Length: 111
Image 1 (cartoon, rainbow, N blue to C red):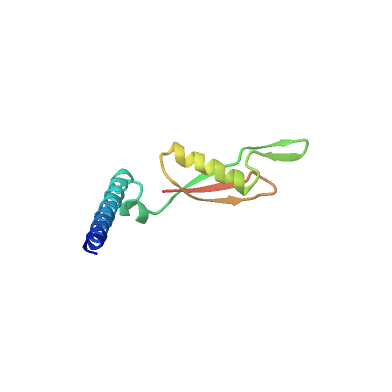
Image 2 (cartoon, rainbow, N blue to C red):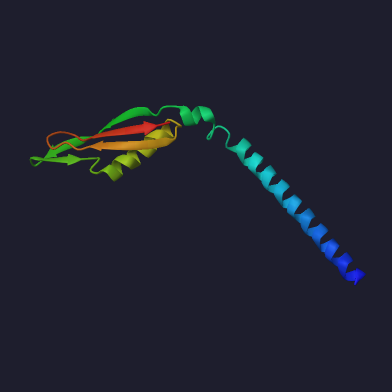
């Protein structure tokens, strides 16, 4: 009977040690990731207002039809993501303004 109690106590002790090691490992991993991505997730970046960059659509008149380079909101978003990457900023959002008689306008917001 005492051998069984000793085994149970050993198992409980081992499981507590494993749990403590696991918790410490998770805490260390959290701090490591926090240090790695410190600039990206800093409070300064979270509170910073997004900058506006206006991308003019390059359009041309062919056979009395206006041909647009940026045709849809999806294409505007792609152009914006590229613009933010070039400026080494993070993409925040895009706004597409369609125009019937002239070139479209694509507003980009980067942080």
